[in-house]
Length: 230
Length: 232
Image (tube, rainbow over all chains, first blue to last red; front, side, top):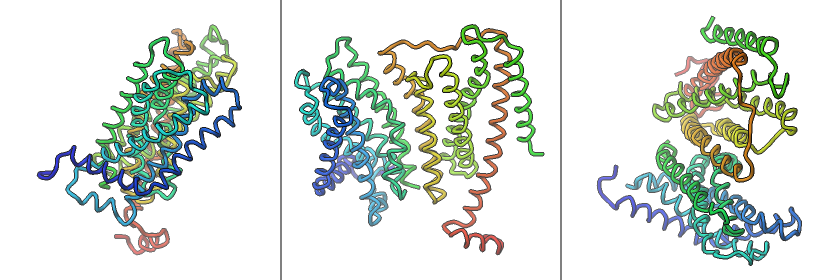
């Protein structure tokens, strides 16, 4: 498609840098998002009651629901900035492969969600008393794959709904039913790290997550050009 | 008379025959007795709902590939008929589950997937209502229909694994031969009725989309004036 200029990978890196720079310059927003996710964690414990045992058992679910809820903010933001002042039209006019725009944005969104997860997991560990859990570095694979599962289709849907007036409502309405498998697998694998994994189920849940990511990242990469070219 | 009306009448006749056989001729179900006779309505609804969603998926691929209005109208009609069948299916399921399993709802993979399927495809209808530019609406709803359809098996298997870690589940799926005929007749009746509804709905959607294209980006009053003046 592009005859000269930087290759696909370098284009993707450029889009990631652009998006992360925009996010970094709006630090107040990042801070607000983190605070929002932490507030949700607090609210879950109020809704369930102060029973430490129950909270411990469901900690993985609360972390992922908080992330899911906060993710709609990063996702809507990633295309709202593009609709301002015709930024997306300008971006599409550049000699950039449209797949690079999708994968760049989706990777930038994944990175943001991973950062958010790394921020709220220690908070969850304190709030829900997860001090007994061992090998917390094993939380990284479910967090990265799970964040990718939200960001992959989420980025495409954000592009789909970018011009809808009620985007804040439409994005979760369309996205949440689709990412049920990713949510199930992410919560399961996170929970196995926190609660122990006597049956050795961890790898199969990670495979579910990875396959989900593979299916929906490829499908989104294929269809993204159609969505933005329209 | 348009061809789909004949198909609809045939469907109605087949459903009547199938349910007559199912209610009065076929033996009562071994475990559930007469309650089991809801099978003749429930199973065809499930089959036909999936077929109609498959039609929506094919139409969505066609709409994305060609950009033709006819495919877009097909997406609209198939998704709408599919959602109606899907909601009907959930309702029948709850009615059947209460006397047999003691609850209206259980987290069985099939039930959970059906519910998620309903929510996903209702999303297509909401999306279509929210977007006003015809080309944008066609692309967006086609893309989302493809995603919703592809996700059905993924959701099913993930929920199945999620569930099997808790408890195995048995469902009343064994069907004896005297029950097969009414089931088949009712299923074809349901299919023909669905074809009838889709065809009717397609004509309506196509007419609406055509009118939009004749008067793009104009408010309804202005569009009406333009049409009265002969259109363009």
